[in-house]
Length: 243
Image 1 (cartoon, helix red, strand yellow):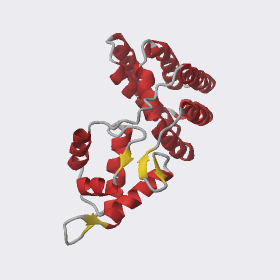
Image 2 (cartoon, one colour; image 1 turned 135 degrees about the vertical axis):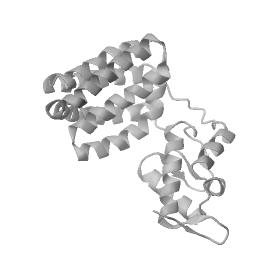
Image 3 (cartoon, rainbow, N blue to C red; image 1 turned 45 degrees about the horizontal axis):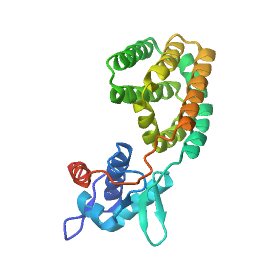
Image 4 (cartoon, helix red, strand yellow; image 1 turned 135 degrees about the horizontal axis):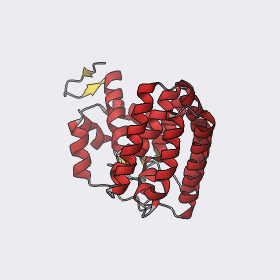
């Protein structure tokens, strides 16, 4: 969707809102903005090349998604998800992902099963090579692929919003010493149960894995509560690249 331009060259309208929403959402999920970091409308609008009205509308959408919160008299900031809230979100994920895993095991095609097995091998390789960042990416891809295969569109939409709020916790868990080695077996159980069309085992594997995640979350708060912003120059560069 194209965006209208104002006399000063800034984009406006629905297209500008969608552009700003996508760019900011990706910046938050990738960690360019830290939890608790203020989102200054004037600066962000200039960086993204959109009007403040379009930027404000995008921030409202991000607030509805649970990624941003508005503080009276202070504006918007990246929402801080506490450990207890992360646990509550994971409990919701457990119910939805267990349903999706069972459905995926019933619906999976031979080609999709081959893809899951390859993903399982890549997970093993990432742990063997001591690459937690790659492992974290593959972890998210496994969960994403299983729920996609399930075809449960309502659950998929709900899970996308829940996952978005947990990205920082999930990444920090993957970096915790010893955690990838623990969760690898759980992820392999999920991948092979779905690939081998074992719905009951797939559902149990998801529940076991997410119960383990809850224990790990409660064992130590992985969230950096300093609220200190990430490198603003890097953030500006990435946002500018997207507009």
